[in-house]
Structures are given as C-alpha cells and as structure tokens.
Figure: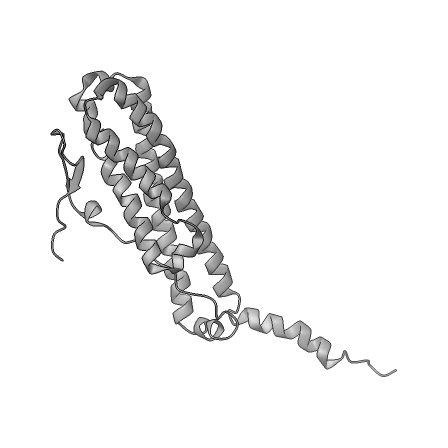
Length: 213
C-alpha cells in the first residue's frame, strides 16, 4: 500500500513558523512588550508619589505654614507633571520623553526641602502622620529608581535587537513600525548635592552644577 505524503503546502505551513521562530522573528515584539510593561511600572510609581504629595503638604501646613514657598513649589511641580503627556507613545518621542523626565525631576527637586523640615520644626518629627508619609515617600523614591533601572535595561535590550542581526532584518521587513525607545538619563540633580534655601521668597531647592565629565 503506497504511503500518502502530506501536501507540500501543509508541510510549509507547519515548518515555516518553526523556522522563523528559531531565527528570532518573535524577539522584537517580545522585547518591546517587556519594555512597555517596564514603562507602565515607572508610571505607577510616579503616580504613587504624586498621590502622597497632597497629604504631605496638608500635614506640613499645620506645623510650618510659613514655609509657603516650599508648599507652593511642590504643589506646582506636581501639577506641572500631571499636565505632561505620559502614555507609552512618548517612549519613542525624544522631545516628549525629555519633557516628562524634566517634569518629574522638578517634583523630585521640590520635595527635597521636606527632608530637612523635620529638623527645622521638631513638632513635625513627633507627628506620626508626617513620619509615616516621609517613610512612604522614601520607599516610593526607591521604587522609582528601581523601576527606571528596569525600564532602561529592557529598552537597551530592545533597542540593541533592532540594531543588530538578525533583529535588524526583521525590523526592516516584518516590524517596520518598530522604533527605538528612549532611556532615562541621570540628571544634574542626581549627580550633585542639592542646595536647600528656606529664606522668604527663595526658590525651595536648587541643584548645584554637575561636575564636568
């Protein structure tokens, strides 16, 4: 009895996806989704910080209402960050990404004086709500740092795949809409010691110039 061979078209339909998968055709969308998921975590942690600020300001106002410039500064910085576009589309738009990073950096800068207020106003240090908020804020800042690090690692992996073989071949054929994603960069604030000024009418916090590289 003759052996019936499967149609070549059927064989091709079975083999081609397997061969393509083995050549890394799925690497770009897989790594892109990982980078997007990491970006979502960055957004979550920045939003967590934004949600803490109103309670922090309200608590400090009860003990240090005269520090008006500090309270106004952080409130305005939070509002400014909320107005900046932050969806995943900015990760492939250099200008929009810089605006987002700058707005979040302004919030970080505006929050610096709160770390010193508890020494300036001892009553604040004994306020359990303030200390709890400070602890949550510090924890959130750490989560932000880790989320940014994880995002940068995922983006470097994705961007490298777009530029190197065989990923560049797939990017030029199957994934022509795939674009490199932007990285968070260390800011002057992160690389230098901040200067905090509580004088009336002074800017709440400024960063000393970053040392030359």
